[in-house]
Image 1 (cartoon, rainbow, N blue to C red):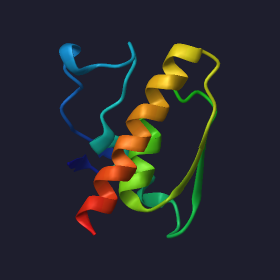
Image 2 (image 1 turned 180 degrees about the horizontal axis):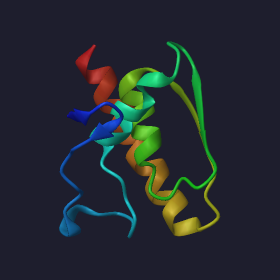
Image 3 (image 1 turned 90 degrees about the horizontal axis):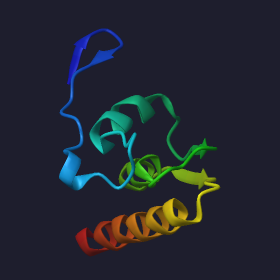
Length: 91
């Protein structure tokens, strides 16, 4: 994933799979969130469709997200809940 120190190369989110027009790949966010201390909390004031929240769930980090657009907020809630269910099924 890391091409040069601080530079990452990951596949983008395919148009057919996007929930938001500027959606970031969860795998990229997981790489970037490695700087957060274990048990830390991430605040995303522009949550969009919740990709950062999903990455936090997969990394075991606490997450607080804000989204003004109600439709995107509902999508984010659904996606993060799904990620929570998937992580508990693995345990």
